[in-house]
Length: 326
Ligand code: UT7
Image (cartoon, rainbow, N blue to C red; front, side, top):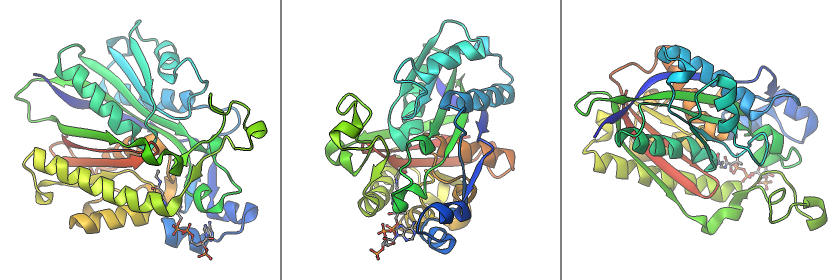
């Protein structure tokens, strides 16, 4: 069996900043409350004209450049998103054309904030089996387009962005590559974090008395996020015979800094080895992990040879972890 390595990374965020000061002007909140409860100072958000595929496109170009590959070298594209430009076709289909790739497999995967880890898991199976040599996997979301800015406890979290990896086949005995990944889901609590309207259940949200905006039971999701990510990390460490001492960096989903801190405390993992980008980028769903990863590669934090643990949790509910020898 081959291994899946990361050949290149890229990311892109829109230029417009939405600061806590901006939010103070449109809702009853304060910079102090948002900073202490979430660790977020500002978020990047798209304009009316920008869509998810635009962010994904720029992140992809950057990852391809980093990998030293051309669009025609890519054998498959997977995009994790819950905010596609259109109900169909997929963002991945649009990227295939816009990047100038061959007629290859291109699909979107819907797993909300855990979406990037879901496509890491799928891509690994495609590459390991020998079916494909190079893949482009992208986490991209424009949550601002479905944020309910009248709901002050959830709207302060959400933002837009994209992160991409070019993943490539590595020899079975390579020291580099994905060592393990796990994704789990439980639909029982799906209404704790979802968009009620706008899909086929309530295609006319106003008539049905629901919103086509994100609803979140913050306190419930907060607790479940910490429990689920902790147990998924324990499962990953056990399956690979690793302990937290073997891990160089933890790159968790950036939902709320208090969740990240509680998670590392639970795991007994030192705070200085945890990658946090939430302060300036907020929670952009499937983009948080590849965005944080790319920014940390570019500033020299994550280095080749590091053992890196990834973990995420979000709507579905879906959660997972992955361990990587970078
Ligand atoms: O990425 C996908 C997964 N998502 C998550 O993991 C997010 C999980 N949840 C959270 O991050 C947190 O629950 C929130 C940031 C959403 C909310 O923080 P919290 O500490 O759970 O606050 P809360 O909703 O329990 O509200 C506490 C108090 C309330 O006032 P009372 O009832 O105690 O008087 C709220 O009305 O804070 C008030 N409040 C605010 N005050 C100022 C809620 N939002 C705000 C606000 N500004 N923006």
